[in-house]
Image 1 (cartoon, one colour):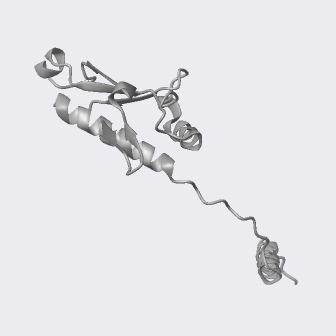
Image 2: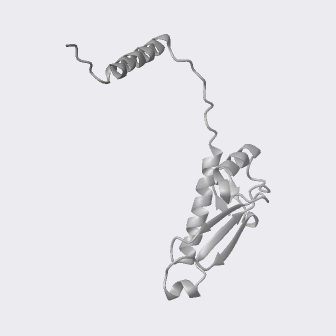
Length: 140
């Protein structure tokens, strides 16, 4: 069981962990020990998430969302398998927590008359400054 919020907990059957060798440098240890963790969460089939949360989660996950509707987190930050596993679970929980917040709707507003006048006045002044630049013609 993975507790996300007071109302959302993820069951163990929804999570699948697999361990592989980590990429990059690391000496002899990296060749022997499977420390990288790939955590797979079956988000689309999860009964604990509401459809709006699933939609936001899909958008937040980006490339980590598979065509089957699963969320795949790969962690190979540390040399410890247990620590990588913990980091992967924390990241998943944080991502789901982020998806539970409904963003506030943006209310379109018009600029005020005063701000429009100020903007146009500033543009006019700037245009005058630029038009005064150039070659100076001497009168003789």
